[in-house]
Image 1 (tube, one colour):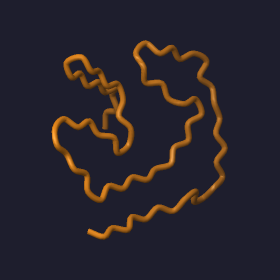
Image 2 (cartoon, one colour):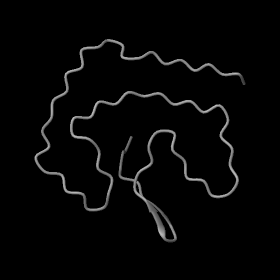
Image 3 (tube, helix red, strand yellow):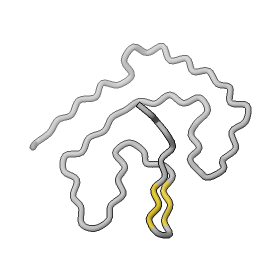
Image 4 (tube, helix red, strand yellow):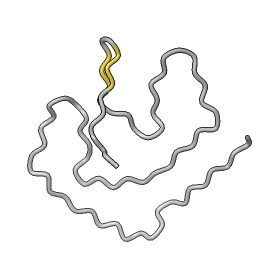
Length: 77
């Protein structure tokens, strides 16, 4: 897999980053029974802007939990 930076240009609208379960709608749209669950450990955070400087990125995360949160989708559909 290639995780290259994504950029969406719609005339005068520029989108640098879409997060989990994020959508860009143009016109009528309906999302039925949408469920997203994820855990993210970030020591240095996230920068999505144009020309964002990143200097001295040193971090350490200690996460000893075996299971942080169980996720289960219950759907009525």
